[in-house]
Length: 99
Image (tube, rainbow, N blue to C red):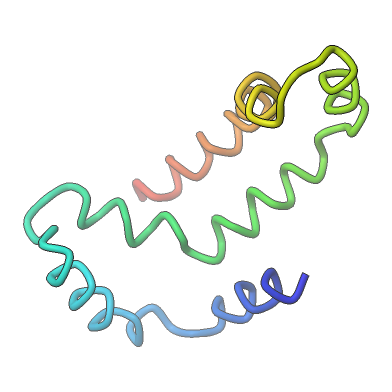
């Protein structure tokens, strides 16, 4: 829970402050002039973490418990239950990142 709140507090930092450190990170990873230079820094933004967390809290625990009873592994539950249910939220994040 503390990590979540630390992520939420980073939403208060203006984007202009993180521009130069992000550029240095992309340059050191040798991703300059690639599509990954645009994709990777935006994956871990605090708003995306907050939105996905809030969306996944709405997933009923009964579905996960039913999958466990049927013998699904943790990865099986994630890929066959959670990811298909989270596709609308991932779509929203994709659209918001395009704008």
